[in-house]
Amino acid sequence: MSTLSYLVGIIFILICLALVVLVLAQEGKNQGLGAIQGTVENTYWGKNRGRSKEGVLKTVTVILSVLFIVLSIILNMHMF
Image (cartoon, one colour):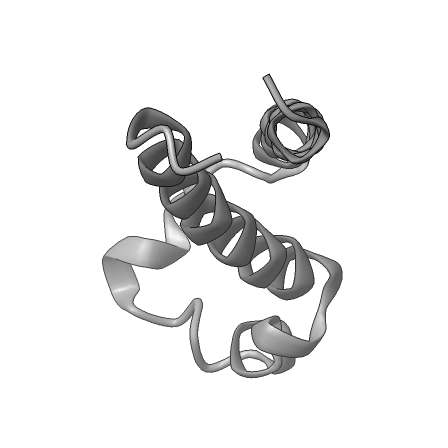
């Protein structure tokens, strides 16, 4: 195996660990009784969720998930 193959493997493992940590750090989707009335999205917190910590965690999780899938395909094709 080449050095590049080991490097891609190490990056893949780091992405896997980061995904586990990020998924565990996110809050659940439980919105309580406010979801029945539809008033959850009308609050300041509901409108600016993308700028909050949870929004950043979600964005980073999506990016790392795409990288995980791409690296999985590359490693499975034995390109290195």
